[in-house]
Length: 456
Image (tube, rainbow, N blue to C red; front, side, top):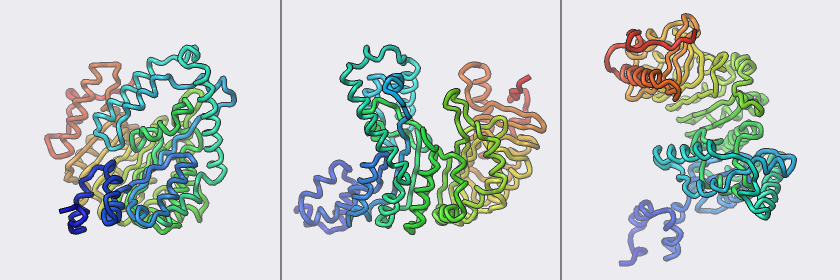
């Protein structure tokens, strides 16, 4: 029996188990196969900050069948740095071996071990590189072609910035993608490990990409406004990195961005607090960010999300203070379905922290805390309350547990400088995590076994 003589339901099951690379060939076997297999061609659109990528987005949205198969969008917003002269550009070209590294870069959704191996290879390559005399590493013709490619690509990105960062194309496309429910905006390796597709798209420029302009503010707004105006029902939104100033939209735009989130079950946001491009110092706008977030502006963005199950709020730095306090971010909300939370670089106090976990004690099953500071209160008391109130299946506590009044500091990540401290950190982290999912006594009560690391 020929495959196109099988019932449509069975053909659909076959298509579900056929590799994506073989679907196009399968479609060519008959008209029936073309019709049944087409929805399996593409369920995720991969967008980068380049005009032809936006054109591809539009073309997909105009296809009567494929447009209905699309359920998710991955938008990598990395852009090219600004160089005034070719000499400045040559000072920053990547080494030829980087192209070889790209060939071995893992696909998106590769296992964590593959991704970590790739990141380690890039880290080692960066450590070993020297800019030196570029003519020893490139022929003059290669440099000339690279500079020309960079100039063209940079000009294209500038045009996108001047034309609303692709908002009109995005809005037009979203209106024709009725089943688009998941949106991920990523820069660098914030949400997803940087993809081979992104790097290969811009590899002719001989430049690594990064966050060079606006730190995601216009891109995040464009995504949320397009989704709201297109009437999409989003169930998953992931944004990172995005500068905290994306919240400073005018009131009409802010309400539309809020409306885009009304049906989400997963919301993840990684918030930047600025970086000094000369010194690479991060967190340079923490005072301004902190002052602004006191108004509960972030809470107003997310509080009317009754279906919320998975919430991640992460900032990029924690000194001299964290950029926000927990109450400013989540207010008095009680999300009836909240099962997973992850907080990073956030200040709180013992009572507020305990109150949040008690409000969600019936639903919370997974908790991740990374570098949290208690303004007042003690960590042993917080952990004991969490242990008593929650029924966790997973707990991750990383970075540092800090306290101001009284002073407290437990290191839970390796420093790679002090082997003794690193071993202690590993033991303390494991003990806390085991305790939170129900084992043993609060480890921080045993100061001999789990001492603090307090600077003199």
